[in-house]
Length: 101
Image (cartoon, rainbow, N blue to C red):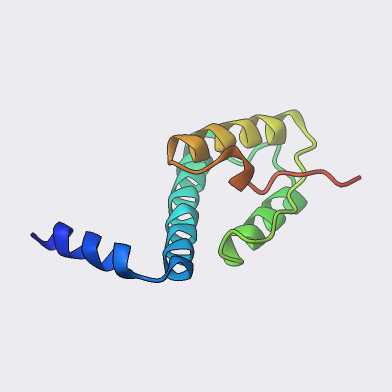
């Protein structure tokens, strides 16, 4: 019954509110996956720059995409997180990994 009410409310909400709610949910799912990946694989080989830029991505509500994986471990973590993001229902374009230089 509660789920039905929530569904009706969600469908009745303005599209912008639905989009914002989904962005918050995606970021939450992604943040959980990030914590699990760090616990499982550790931080060895992940530079301070990589970690701090990733922290900034999470702190921004998953809005700032400016994390450039450079080491083999960073590339592996980026791959893990891309698959985790897709498994969580987000698009692969949601992840923060991009190298501009």
